[in-house]
Length: 256
Image (tube, rainbow, N blue to C red; front, side):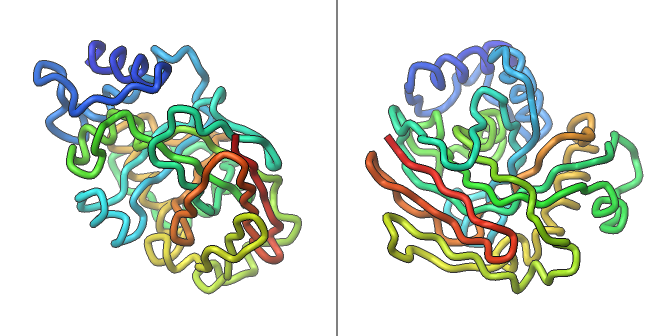
């Protein structure tokens, strides 16, 4: 597991690609994937400030040939504020994803009993507009399978976090809430919370229980970004992406 983590971090830092992890350190299931991912964070020397959820739509799951969502760690050295310029150097995916992010005000530790939706939502403090810019350390991330994708931090790369929504988001229907993605001022996609496991709150419940089973749970202060709301927006150097979350605010990022 340490060999796998060290190799993946080296690939990440040097923008290298590998067909698959060597057989002697290749994870065989989710538990081993998350164990490698935990070591990857340690090897990076960076603080974990939250979590991302990949493959929160049926289309996304089909695209990477997995049967459910995947969790990855957000490393503090890869988190930027709204309006930032994001480097695409070495990035093979080159897409921007519009996402609902949530900051937790209470911890949800590891336990045997699954967390209910009410318990999870009671622990959430704020909602934030966000943009994720994913990438993979595999030559073809669509064929390596869930355990290796989890080990590779669920295709994490850059994350752009906006300020907390200035309205009481709990009064809104997140399933129907519309989000519009623009690139260089032109509409590139529209979506709603329905595209995120049917409801972004479902994604929060999923990750609370996934980390309760395979990790140490969620900690107060951590941020969870719940997966792309619109079709990922292709980007290249010189582009500017702006995501309009309506009453929840807007967030933008430029690319170099």
